[in-house]
Amino acid sequence: MAKKLPIVAIVGRANVGKSSLFNAILDKREAIVAREAGTTRDSIMSKAEYKGQNFWLVDTAGIKDPEDDFEFTIQEQVLQAADSADVIWVVVEADIPITEEDRRVAKMALKSRKPVFLIINKLDKAKGHDLSGFDRLGIKPIIRTSTTQARGIEQLLDSLVGIIPNMTHSDDDGRLKIAIVGRPNVGKSQLFNTLAKKQQAIVADRAGTTRDVNKTIVKYQGREVELLDTAGIRRSGKIQVGIEKFSVIRALAAIEEADVCLMLMDVNELNVQLDQKIAGMVKEAGKGLVLIVSKWDAIEDKDAFTRDELAARIVRNYDFVPWAPLLFTSSVTGQNVTKIFDLAFEIDQERGKRIATPELNKWLRQAVDAHPPAGLKNRAPKLNYMVQETDNPIPAFKVFGSHTKFLHWSYKRYLDRRMRDAYGYAGTPIQFWFIEKHVTHRNGSSPTKNQPHEELAAQKLAAKTAAREAEKA
Image (cartoon, rainbow, N blue to C red; front, top):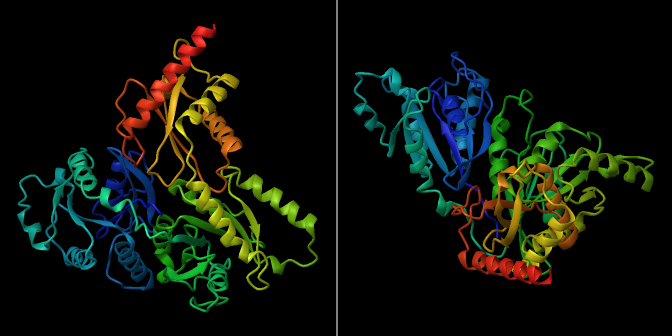
């Protein structure tokens, strides 16, 4: 079962403060903010969290009259954002009366039939202004904000998290969903067609042919598999004029919808930074990942040594996802294509693996005994017990202890590596939530509910173990 995070798109005409709102929510400067209208030319996205709810936040370029192809592209990217997003925030300026562009944005958003918020921004500039006229846009709820004064941000996020919990799960139909992602012209559509065994996607030599997410359902070993072929993701500054300008949003939506992602890289263009960024997006989304080198047939005079040499180089470049399997394929010859389904099934099985609480706590004691966590003086982290989250499609574990905030990132990586050595989990990220034993857990960044009965059982088990060890001493 795929578990997706909602996508929230911030839309509006140019210079209404969308990037400032984006930055205020993330509390970091990820988008360029300037007084010149239309500064943001490409979408900026980041994962955000508020009161235990996670979501993707997307900042879009402003809508302007399509005076030229470039401005038409900006308009198109906002339309596609509304099409792919789960929630739409329409931003207007408090100190400027409703414009024709505002009306167009509102009409577009409402037409999507998605939840729509109207955000009246720059409230600090509207002293004495009558804001009741914005009701005519027909959007509710209406939130008034000032990013410079941090006013209305919490109200906006409270309203958001009140509606997004129901969006975190896709339909549990038992179907495995596989998304094919990567840069343009690396062979995604060709692989899609080969896997689907029919020409459902357009295949052309020209880069960027796929504009939308093509989907098809096939059966493999008696199970339904839904394939999603996404438009290529272009590097910022290299996005050409055309409808594929905002394809990254649809690719992100496909990643969130999928259980397993196939990240394609062209054998003729390895070690591309954008490929690594896309793999990082898949990891951040918590999805299964297979690294696929495409167009293997294009390499002449190759042998096992050539493949091994390239594999070693790729492994070094993708050391942040050492658990992702690597496959060399050719959609022309069909080499290793059938292995893709087998790998995806294996990864799906690994993601569903559950470990009993007593076994987990035995593993934790052995891991800590072999390598105790370091810390500050009188602030050494102590890990007492752990449980696995049962309703999370990602292998996720809550580890309870004291002074957990002092755990070094390298120790978390040590636990991840040791967990994989013991239980596998190939092809999928693992998540650890470190929780202070005396603090009520409110899920933190975890999107799942508490499991008090499991935590109580783990706590009792840890107490019994400590008592037995004390008796032996």
